[in-house]
Length: 262
Length: 262
DNA sequence: GAGGCATACTCGTATAGACGAGTGGGCAAG
DNA sequence: CTTGCCCACTCGTCTATACGAGTATGCCTC
Image (cartoon, rainbow over all chains, first blue to last red):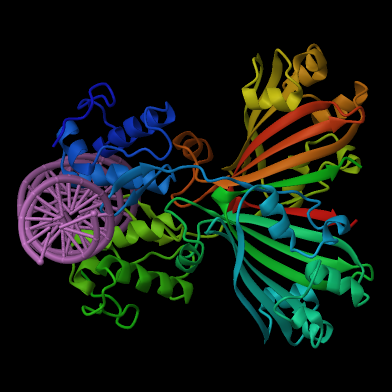
């Protein structure tokens, strides 16, 4: 067991009333913040920290699990504990649904990802007819049944977003919208062709910790929240024609909105 | 030690390869989701769970800490572990800075909170002149110095938001903006009086886990992320006249935006 | 040289025990 | 009746130990 490089970490203050595991977490956090451990770098192993601080392993693990739930580090079984690298972020601009972005054959996600130099993928595509949940039903004006389109988006093999669109069935049945691939410009282009000229979108944004299911689907590390975005699309008659429910890995996104000062 | 009410929780599957503490967490999570433990209700004590499942206390604590970092429960020293109640949410609409909301004497926060039946407070007000951080400097067009206005917002005694405004010093010095209370309509009204007619806002939204400092300032429970919002205000000449950096308790907010379909 | 195995290192899971500290209720003394 | 103390119950912190399971490396065999 190699000793820790001296100077990297200090020692404990036994007179402090701050719990030992908190002191250890503090020191590691500060070392990371100061760049003494770079992004992706491996922290000292649990055994090394046990030796260095002269505490039991559970105390060290307690400190590490604290940093983990802060999203600062992540552990890999058999390898070690690593400073969590900040993944490239995807910037969502508020004009991303503007008609001018809807011309080309590819989906908005694909075009934008390729422009940013990433390899986009869409997966788990699923189109079904269902009874709407209470929330979706209220937003869509209480249709009896809805068409749901689920899909997962990945960048360079990493899942970043999981989305479900809901459309009133009377509007979408037997149209290209009910096809797995709705064609160039996506379902918004198809909606307009069907006479539902889009007028405005409303987006609601929440942030929270992911459910176990979401952790699996988005392969989230500990300490990564999700952004939950619900978008409702209205046509010019004021009818809600689509609700899109999206759960995004929060470490992969920045949302950007332009607001007029009116 | 009273036995657990039977039927509330099941037993473990020793043949499963799912870790025991995960099975315990699963059962508790499901019981909470099904409403067997209501919001604010007390879970069985650690000792009761130890007896019920026949495991050691650390295993039970491991399960509970999992639920805690999911934001499902929170523990109170000396009292027990409780299902975390969902606090009332504050809805931020995208027209909240519209001029028509700027007429009255009170701040937007105060008016809106009272309308929602909450008791608003603003605290830790601090006005200073500083050198801008690299990020703020870039957004404001590299001013040498900035006026910073910090404040914390509370609803019914609970901190929900911590905000810092940055304004170019040449623009704000010796104006009402540099006063603790800038007067009716807030600093946006004052900016317009000074000839900086506001044209548009840009908002950038991220979500992440809070730093230890933010946990203290916002008195956040474990498993509650923060929403980090950075707003830049531009006047009609295209100049950035204010950057407002806001950190919000994610469990207290829903952001809502209206987007034209253009 | 290629493949496979042993081994040492990593973190993951679990046990058993000890003491500290915050909370609340009951009981006893005034 | 009120005050104050004690005690039981709660979670918080920490130690010591054990074994399992994933990973990487180097050596040995073929």
